Length: 119
Image 1 (cartoon, rainbow, N blue to C red):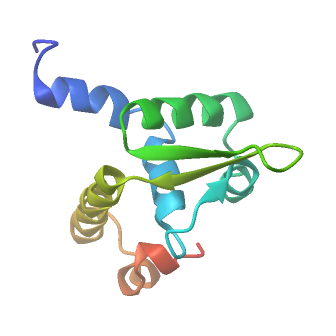
Image 2: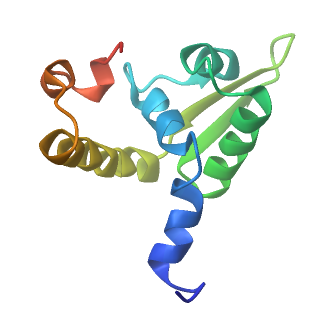
């Protein structure tokens, strides 16, 4: 496959481990910004280095934005979805629908919107 192919380029960043789960974590709740520590707490198996790397990559791809508050000590950094990131959540939901139809029988997951999921 040619490296200039749109699918090739897109799969390079969304196919990395944890990427979809980080986006989904930022979607969960009420679209409020989340601090690094909150994301880490809700994704306990991710290493700090991978989380930091993925957040930088997602910011570079304009799927998330980082807000730095220097008015406090220590400085606070918060992450939230951009419009592009919010739009990408639709694709994640489509993946969920496909998975429920063809791969996984998960009645609890079928009845929940990912935004309200506490699994």
